[in-house]
Length: 424
Ligand code: ADP
Ligand code: SR1
Ligand code: MG
Image (cartoon, rainbow, N blue to C red; front, side):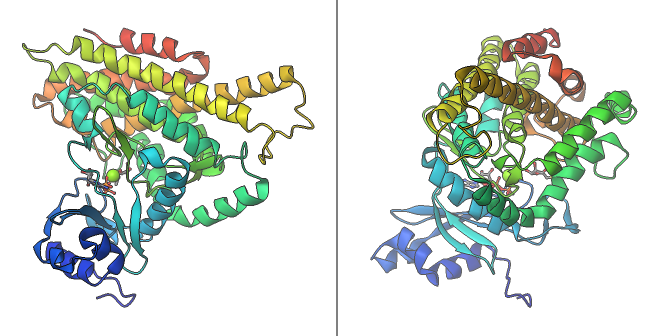
């Protein structure tokens, strides 16, 4: 045990921990403690950072997630604060309050052990990214994700909060600085310079990676996005809203893993989700085979991209309208007192958010192709040349979106650009 009382668990010691922890034992066994004698434990952490244990009792289940003091996918050479568990649980609770339909319930938190007990998002839920690789359609995905993003972003912004409440919350989440610094490094810095962590499909993308490192306009624009990421405390964002942070069935959508949460720009979340759908789109040709050319699936992904933005826009502005005379102090009703002005303000706010979404989404695409932590969408394409072709198309469109984002006026224009940059 470390001097701070922290002890990394394993499949065996998780059982002892649960037996000694009433808030977990009661979820699993209710008033029948003998059920704790037949627990089935599996470590399933396939993420980059933490250990995740699925715990199954005869008539209940839960997940135990523990942060360890380093980045799991790199090893102990990259120390990382285990306080991330505190921020993850705090965001889970806040987002769960605002959007319980799409957030797993928290049962337990142990600050010393950096350990969260939460709902097991049970099968047939799978990680969305795996569903996208398998070519499965999710008819409610855009509806659910737009709902989640509209609620968590609107209700934690100055459009709904007083500046006093907002600033207090911003101050609390400034504590998640190490996780923000990780993002600053791997998304906004490393891909644009030589870094020991960068990786790409070599030799096919050698020139493309070099081109990213020597593109002045790209660097100018990504620098602006980095500043915005660091400076704009717009809302309590999830902070890592890629398609492996979403678990799905065709009917249900659950968002996990908000350990990077802090008060940051809304477009970082919306962009993460949409940018990862774009990666899935460009990976499809690598998964096509004689039995399935993936044509209709690609059309479904494009429709989901468009629906996600359009529904998000609709729901977010509807919340704004509903609460325009509420506590929010960004646009005081006494000043923004006529519908023409209110319309202008909303147009501008949503246009800026759209451009942020494209910029951050594109930056997230670029890091997954020439930086650290690649994605299964591409990694599961065994033929390196084929994979590189898919990655190159995604990289080219991402560079364009990042540099030219302000020229786009609608998501439909973005979708037609995605099609133009797609060779089949
Ligand atoms: P990391 O923080 O290391 O990225 P994640 O939170 O992404 O870890 O979890 C890693 C994996 O564990 C997920 O891909 C998922 O398969 C599984 N997992 C995490 N939380 C849950 C949950 N609440 N219910 C079911 N499975 C989960
Ligand atoms: C060391 S980079 C690890 C990545 O995994 C997380 O999911 C975040 O996306 C982070 O950038
Ligand atoms: Mg994760």
